[in-house]
Image (cartoon, rainbow, N blue to C red; front, top):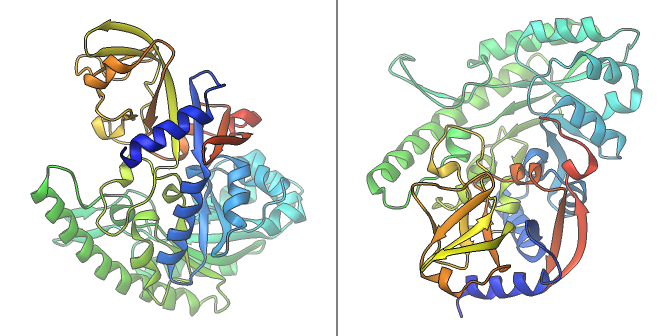
Length: 400
């Protein structure tokens, strides 16, 4: 029996009493992935990205693991909710225009102490000031550095379109604006190198593309390490007591941690290990989050149909954004239909061994987005469900 077949047998036994559709997290794999992230971070703390987890119970579990400290959140409303739930040291990774939430933040000492907001433009400070109302708490601020690699005089850009702050001088200018402004405190710098951390460098069946990605990433790592160090020096000249410099992501943990200028790493997807993280030469993880759909039809030889399953991930549309049938091994989509809103035909010889009501296990393309489809996660240890816990959605929280 292969390791994957053994996992299928475990999951089927653990959930035999449960009807699909359902989602599970294999805690043995989840914990092993957490330990691997800590090993790769080489002693630098890891701030867990909440958007990749979207379950308070599992956020608590990973933050209880040595080597993890703090949360990187994705909306201001989520940040306030987490702070009110008892989480501390929450860094909002994206600028916000939520005036209601800013008013709450500025009026509550506990929230203001727990949450740091992201800024890359002075006009964002104006928005916050305009939303304060009667609140006069000091707002903690982090500046985001654009990590994109620019080549040929800027005519070619590789990297996500995020912050406009690219050079040390640009970041230092905004740092001075924050430092001069009453009611704000600059505490950190963040730089997410998505073109390194979020792009696999071993694309199956694409050797030339894989080599090109590795060359690009090696060049980008060198350029960014030098520029990030210069940015940190420039900002520390303005704010000597900067608390942290955050960088990286699941796919670049060990490379980013090697930079002296970086004090902490961000990671989250590496806990669940969705399918987009299968194509890396620098690490491998154990798939920990899966969902099951029930077989409801057998249209013919080598074909079964499961209920639902069309759960595409965000990003540029393409086959890599689709979930994949994972267990039993050997199933594939019908190219004429793909994964559907209410039914999904699956082709392959394993279909002939599946009965009505059997479960087919899938892996989502991205990490936390799976939790937007399910109210609960069934936590599996060995071959038993040991707990069933709510996702954000299950707690009535849909932040985006």
